[in-house]
Image (tube, rainbow, N blue to C red):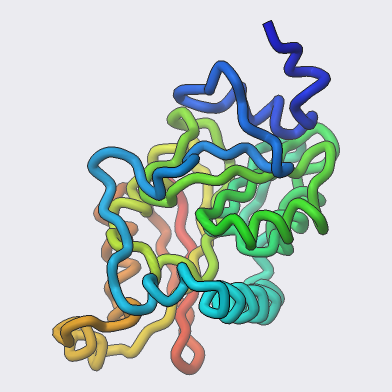
Length: 247
């Protein structure tokens, strides 16, 4: 039997204890726990098939995506201040869905204290490689998984952050349902998405649109449909942040 204490980093050992279906032979060869492998989505989970997603599979497209995601997360993480609004308990568990380069995950790791755990989840291997190089630590670990099918057991997380990701997810409602499932009652979520107000309805009717643009109340409504309360929305320019609490 493989000794996981010598082959798996401490944060990922703790992550394995939270998984709904932990692998018998965890793949941590790249510094993160790969729960996807060669298949980019699990059974019953819709895959990205639009022109933007196709571009991301190319080397140049991947570089552009990674650069833009990193820049967006640096800019909006400062504006959102997620660690200040989520009231993460000392020793708690925080989840960064679509973690990108891991900057927000690292901030969550500082917020949970040495006894806590901050996990970043992303589908992009290049983003996870950057996150691992820059931010892995005793209480910060990274997993490769799909936002629409989070690998954690229910009610195992105290806070969730999701910045500039849902516009690229085929089924944002499924991703939010998963966030609700893994959050403990009273746990908080902070989400940021692009929005076009009422014009979003026109955008969503266009064929082959490159990414989703959310309506003015759309994200808040979806959160309430999945059991979130105390929903607070704040918009600036073409972006919107929403905070809420798991009921």
